[in-house]
Amino acid sequence: MNTASYTASPGIPPVLRFAPSPTGLLHVGNARTALYNALFARREGGTFILRYDDTDTARSTAAFAEAIAEDMDWLGIVPDRVEHQSARLGRYDESVERLKALGRLYRAYESEEELDAKRVSRRRRGLPPIYDRAALKLGAADHARYEAEGRRPHWRFKLIGRQATWTDLVRGEQAVDTATLSDPVLIRADGSYLYTLTSVVDDIEMGVTHVVRGEDHVTNTGVQIEIIEALGGAVPVFGHHNLLTLPSGEGLSKRLGHLSLRALREQGEEALAVASLAVLTGTSLAVEPVADLDALAAKIDFGKISRAPARFDPAELSALTAASLHQLPFGAVAERLAALGVGGGEAFWLAVRGNLVRLSDAALWWGVVSQPLEPHAAPEDAPFLAMAAELLPPEPWDEGVYPRWIAALKPASGRTGKALFHPLRLALTGAGSGPELKALLPLLGRERARARLLGERG
Image (cartoon, rainbow, N blue to C red; front, side, top):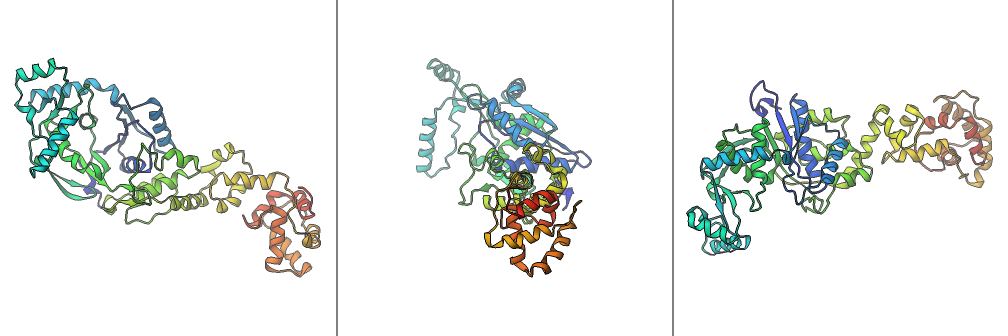
């Protein structure tokens, strides 16, 4: 990886941000953006800002903001700084006045219906369906008339109309001709600010050096470059990654709750698995379990992100969750196991982790080890199991007890293969498959193992 191409200013640690609107639950597509920003900042010794885009008071809620914080914590993302745009309205007011003084903001009064009619008319005439700047021709008398009619203006940013160019971390050399775009609305008729303004003001004042986001913002970048320059800010490094979709190809939606992080958490998916799949899907890198977020951060290479949409498959996630569990050390899960009521310490975890699909499965195996078990052996195997009970070695037991026991039982019974091992497993665990008996037998103990072999509830 050529890290120099990622540098805004040599020697200056990068500053990145994730700016969700608290209007719904985060989904894996949002997690993709959050992780790219947070992990890149972590790897490069930079700063990661969680910035709530909560100026839309009609739709933003404290409950959704809290849910975002919970999701970030679950993923293991710890922001270096948390900001709320709703607390920065005074800064936006100042920037608005500067843009007005520069002649870059102007009032417009068209309703949505009138704007739709204009777009239709322009299409019929073979013209691009962009705003015709009719409001620029309004005089003082026109403004007074509209105000008297009860119309409240929205405010548009006057684009210069040029080629806005940048070198994108993902897409390479990019250009947007702002002459082909409508002058963007920065202030709604109700006086509230749009993200296009607040994001730029925040990025300038917070020293954001890299803006990494979905490719649906590519066109916005041309507009934002003009606003940044109008406000005298430094243009950051931009990177626009491909978007995740459902297996059907349908886009993800917060409103519809597609693959929300909360739902995945409740289904028992592992946070590291979600992070790995969210980051590595749609790249040329192999999707595989990682030991921790630092290991995932080391893999990030924006140049290896595909330009095509990437399909996020829940079935692949489930397999990755299992694979992630299979390699986790006891220390990484000790507290979670305790919360599930699972004991046995590291010995139990190492015995069962390779057979888990979800962490909650550990509780089932702990029940097998620590709770009375109803007899499961077939009646025809009773004589064999009685012999097995008599040949159990004396305690204390360690992992060497199982091979010693089998070494004595095999010649005494004349059984081999499945005929030897399956009845033992069924009697001792009540299941036809599962963790190795070599590891489970010391956890069961001689008394419980003997009772189960003899068909007693043990």
